[in-house]
Structure formats: C-alpha cells, structure tokens
Amino acid sequence: MLELFMERTIAFLLFWGIWMLAPLVIDLTTAALYLSMVILFPEKKEREALLELNFLPLVSVVIPVHDSSETLYACLKSVVDQKYPLEKLQIICINNGSSDNSFNVFGKFQNDYQHASLSWINMDRSGKSIALNAGIYMIKGDYIINVDSDAWLDEFAVLRMVETFEHDLTLVAATGAIHIDKKLGEQTGLMDVLHYCEEIEYLVAFNVGRRYQSITNNLYTLAGAFSAFRRDILLKSFQYSERTVSEDTDLTFHIRNSAQKDNGRLGCVSSAIAYVEPIDSFSKLYSQRVRWQRGQIEVTSLYDPGKIGFLRSLRSTNGRTLVVDHTLAFSRLTWTFLIPFLYFLGYPLNLVMAAFGGMYICYLLLDFLYYLVAVKESSGPYKTGIKKIWWVVFFLPIFRSITYWFRISGILLAITEQSSWKVENPIAQLTEAIKASLKHMVNKFRKYYSRIKF
Image 1: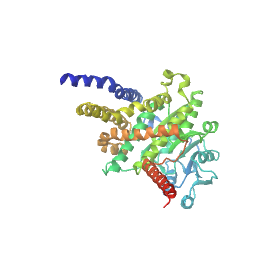
Image 2: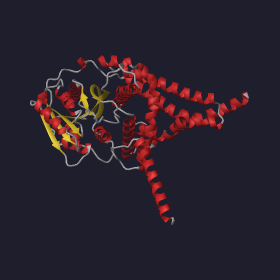
Image 3: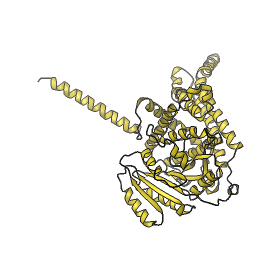
Image 4: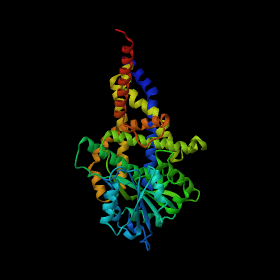
C-alpha cells in the first residue's frame, strides 16, 4: 500500500508538478524582480526634494464624456478645486455620443463656475479615441491631462504631475495612480470584499508594478482614467487609435518606442491620484477584465516581440507580459481546472487537496509581500485606511484566480471575434444561447408537425 502511494506521489510530482510549477516559478521570479527594484529605488515623496516652481505652465484637461450625467459634475469640480491656479487650467469636455443629459450637467456646472475656462465639443462619431483626438487639437497648454468623466482627481493631482514633469525633462508622458473611491474597512459584505480586493490590486499595480516599469523605462500602459503628456510628444504621435479596444496601451507603446530614440522616458507619478468608482457586479468585472486582456493581446501582437528573438524579448515588459499572460495560459488552466479531476483518475484525495493547499499558500505569501511593499510606498490617511483591510489579502489568491479565468476568456475572444469596446457578460451570453436553442427547437417542431397530415 505504501509503495503504491509513493509511486503515485512521484508520478504526480513529475508530470503534474511541471504544469503547476511552471507558472509559479515565473510568478516568483517576476515578484523578486519587481519587489527588489522598488525597494532599492524608492520614490522620493518628500516635497522638499522638488524645488519650488517659479513658473506654473498652462495645463489642458481633456475629458471624454459618454452618458456621464451622474459623475460629470463631481469630475469637473475635482478639476476646478485643484491646488493649481484655475487661470492656468483649460478644461475641454468632448461629447462622445452621449444619450443622457450630460450636456445639461455641464451647463449647470458652467453656470456655477463661470470663472473657469470650460469648453464643450460635440462629435458626430462616437468612440473614446475619437473624442480624445478631437480634444488634442483644441489644447493650448504645455501639458495635456486626460481624465475619464467617471473619475475625480485628488486636489494635488495636477500640481504633482506638473512638478514631476518640470523637474525631469526626460519625462515625456506619465500615468497617475488610480484608487477606488470607497471608505476602507467600514463594511464587510461580499461586494465590499470584492471592492477591497480591487483596491489592493490597484495599489500593488501602481506602487509596485508601474513603479518597476517606470524605473526600467518599460511602462506598459498609461492609465486611461488619468494620464499626462507633454504637448509636443503627443502631437508628434499618431495619437489615439481605433485599431484595438485598448487605445491607451497602443498609444503608450508608440510614445515609448519613439521617446526611447531620444533618451526620453515614460513614468508613473504615484503621488498624483485619481479615484474611480468600484465595480458594482461580477458581470461588470468580467466585462472589464475581458476588455483589458483582449486589448493587451491585440497591442502586444502589433508590437511583436518575436521580431527581435525570444530571449531578447523577455527583457522588455512587452515580451514578458506576452509569455506570462498568453504562453503560460494553458498551463495555468491545467492546475486551476483539471487538478480536481485527478481524484477521479485514481489519485488520493489528500494528495489533490495538498496540491491546492500548497498553491494557495504560495500565492498568499506572494500577495502578502506585494501588499507590504505597496503599503510602505503609500502615505497619509490613505495608508492608514489600506492597513485596516490587511485581512483581505487572504482572499486575493481566490480573486486573482477568478479574474484570471476572465482574462482567459479575453484571450479566446481576441482570437475568435472582432474588436468591440462592449463585452457581454457570461450570464447574458448563456441566456441568449438558451433562447436561441429553444427558438431553434420550436422552429424544428413546427416544421415537423406542418408536414404531418391528419
């Protein structure tokens, strides 16, 4: 009996262990690289490190608007309430095919803040990229900041951006940090835990992931919700394109490749913060992650790292992302979906459960390390709030597993369907499939009975 158990254990480790360990080894290596660089090159948060500016340049804020009547007023108010001279801000709203009363909200705001420089532009064609490009041609400022109409800015966001650009002449574009607009630690319902997981994910993404990419000048995406550009670099670029569902990533790649030729760089200003509303349902989380993953695959394929060879491509964020999120996708599928079936293939239940438990513990420790470093890079009241939800880290491996399945769906959609900004959630897709099947069956029965003569 013992010999049989040992034989099956060895077979399990040799065959299935490879499938399980390959993604884990990649994730551990990536974590070691990211965390070590962020720890060795911490971001300077002391404002004394930045000399006081003698001149504040004009800044143009472009806000694409699409059915944003509920959030537009708060977004605009966060811009005019900046700790930056209002006379140095040009605010341009681009109507991106809205069907609600967004214009009425804008009109009310314009009436309430008549001293602000506000403009509204209607577009004949819909699409965020079209709206942003239209705004670019209206700008007067030295810097361009794009802000989503469902986001609102921290009061120091614009100032922190401008300070960073003015004191780093090599910086041509930068992303701000995105946080969830939610009081942390006050509620513990299921959706609250989902929101907390989302917040920690954003925290790690910007305080660790984007920081590492900024240090190595391999920034993958300038956040669509809040990013800034030097005017000249944006006008020289091909601007926002419609060829993918991730126009932000596409533009990032183009600007980064162009800037590196002139020793320019892209960065992350984590002290410049924008807040967005948390996802309010699992179906919207699914749609969001499918769109992100699809855009990632589409953009990566446009800037093919394989043209420079596999090993050299791994030095770049582009190549590593393609390997981790695409090449290893099916090995991850194996240990997240097929491992339970090992029990029915004759493997002892305790061995299968031990495999799941071991993977969970490994990723839990990994998430704790990310969390600790990300919190260390935070400051102020936000740092106090994020510490209150430390216990949410225990849910992160499960959250990441769920979102990874959503991302797998994005990969499959990128292969099988044409690009679309809107993604139907899986429940709606299943419902439509059932309706279509029932309709098909009814039609078949009708045709059958119509041929029967009584």
